[in-house]
Amino acid sequence: MREVLPEGAISLTVPADKSMMLVIRLTTAGVLARARLTVDAIDDMKMAVEEACTLMISQQCPPGALCVEFFRKDAGLEIHVHSVAEHPCLCGMDPAELEVVRAILCSLADAAEIDYQDGKIRNILLTKELRP
Image 1 (tube, rainbow, N blue to C red):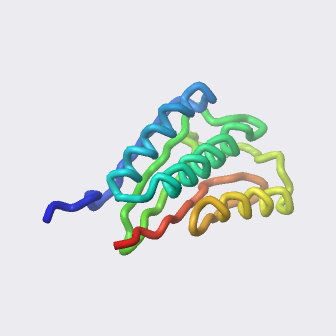
Image 2 (cartoon, rainbow, N blue to C red; image 1 turned 120 degrees about the horizontal axis):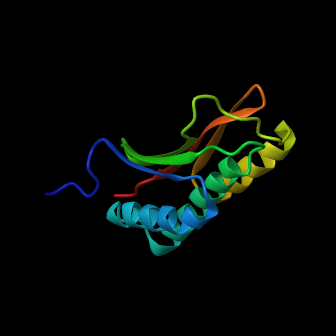
């Protein structure tokens, strides 16, 4: 039987601009449909990825580009959202605000982690379990 989602990464790099959200959402939908998620799960994950990208773009000095990477891991899918920049910029949010954002992301994905160090967001990880 052919693999539903190939091993390795699927990577999308786009300019860090809100006008690119449609491209990100369509790519996310395509990858998740290929992973055979339900329509509701796809909609939730598209929203989670868009929120993660918006958080990265809304930093005090936004990155020039965003990278969204999809990895199949065991019985799940990991989605990494990070900026394409040598040095991450200051986030402009305090840890309590980021915890609220993380809780919102967790309500849409099975798990969410925000790599926040020294006032900077380095990576946002979203995880979705793939059901057989």
